[in-house]
Amino acid sequence: MAALPPMDQDPTLLAVDAAISARGNAEPPRPYLGMSELGRPCERALWYSFHWCTPARFDAAVLKRFEDGHRGEELQAERLRLVMGVELHTLDPRTGNQFGFADLGGHLRGHMDGAIHGLLQAPATWHVWEHKQTDEKKQASLVKAKIAQGEKAALASWDAIYYAQAILYMDYAGMSRHYLTCATPGGRHTVSVRTDAHPSVARTLRDKARRVITSPVPPARLSERPDWYQCQWCPHRDLCHLGGTPAVPQVNCRTCAHATPELDGDGRWSCARYNLNLPVDIQRRGSECAAHVFIPDLLPWKAVDADEETGSIRYSGHHGEMVNGPGGWSSPEIALQPMLFADAAAKRGQDAVTAQVAA
Image 1: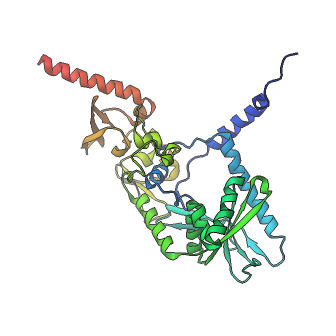
Image 2 (image 1 turned 90 degrees about the vertical axis):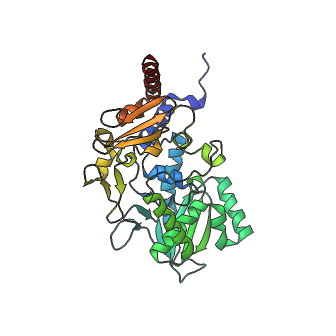
Image 3 (image 1 turned 60 degrees about the vertical axis):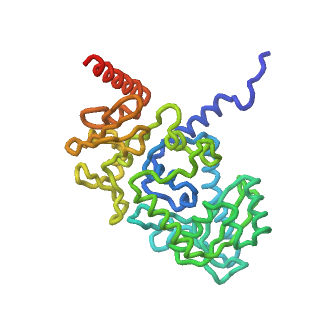
């Protein structure tokens, strides 16, 4: 009798994982800079995400962890409500929707898990409530941080991203305390940590968000080394460090030199080329616009000139020259075939040299 295939090679389960990946990666990028991400150390990576430069690619294992986190939040809310005297709101009573905050013209947004009152350790104080689902190792490190740093300082030393999220949510909600519950997969074991508000840190984070949102070019790199530990797993690594094969961003309005995020509306973007506003659905279809030209700093070549009449940008590099826009290479051509562009640019440079010699 033939040997059975390994358990992890079950074709049905492999198909399930493929379907999970396809579904999860089909989600479009969100149109705002999230407060849940602002604690990340690299402003350049935040800028790339805000400008939809690199498509999100998650495998099934990561997407399952996301799903576990969403379901764990519902389970933990149900459990907290079992305690007499605890009042937990996961929806804003005024709107019937999740508690949400917006700032900087709607380009900075956050959605907190809930507001809780009646905690036995602080029954008179309202707290912002957030739930996280982590593996056992990360949860254990939170426990160690509470022991070593004290409860009120533990969150900041445990996870800078979660801490920034907590600080911003407290500031926008007008609350002075934050209550984070952290459970292992399936909600089998839960620990908590309470954190105090810190208005000056909230201001610093808002200033950071403003820099990311308003910068016309990518901010400085966190490290100039592509092998830096925080860069190795960054989804924007190839685009950021421009090593090896030319890396180019996605084609949409947010990677176009003509588009600008405005601070006077509800997440408004404008197009200088056509003097109009850009709704989110139009922004996503930027590849259909013949006038799209990449923000020069997103390409691995040096911009040397711009044609105001056509909106095109001319580049120079060790392979020769290239025009991005009307009269030259379209952005989709560059994005889909970066090596073809490199080869063609090299040929153009070679032809120019040959012509000069012949002359």
